[in-house]
Image (cartoon, rainbow, N blue to C red; front, side, top):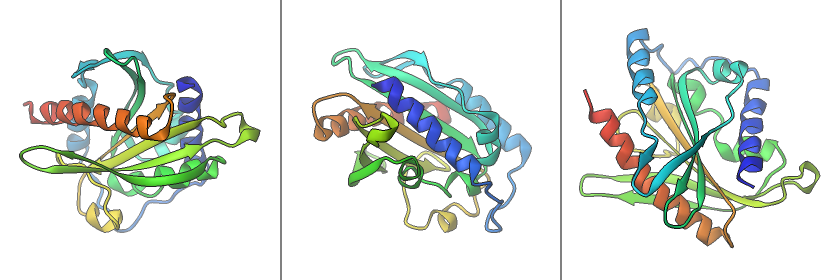
Length: 216
């Protein structure tokens, strides 16, 4: 099921590319050296953190999708929890902010025939800040052979704090780069369990990301 859901995630991004997005006027062009620095950081994202180990690399994003989303780099990987054996698909993208915020998962998956039947928030709290991710529970379209249920959670950051602001174009319009993180959880008995798995993963993943970005 995790492979089917990952394939759907890639297909949803392909749908974005087919829309032939145009650059927004609200955003500045990031200096090449800044994007290159953030791209190199992503290359060093750990294959193990918390209770999670990488199991496989995800399917590559087509070059057309990368271009239309304005990506400088991305990470697509499947992690497994050592204790529960639950798997989570992780996608982290970094690039210029404009195109990354234009098509959130709720639009992309709906365009692929998946039906949303609940939305919510996942809050990751620590001593310094609260990270906010949006969660969406889906059931796939029977005609697309993706009728299984799955959960997607996503957020953005231009520093170390993740959020899903109401008006992301204005929030991130002056930033020179943007990260977008998206996790997908399939399997499990119900959506409550899948959301709990997403929260467990994000708690450890956010910490790993903060450690990575604080490194020289």
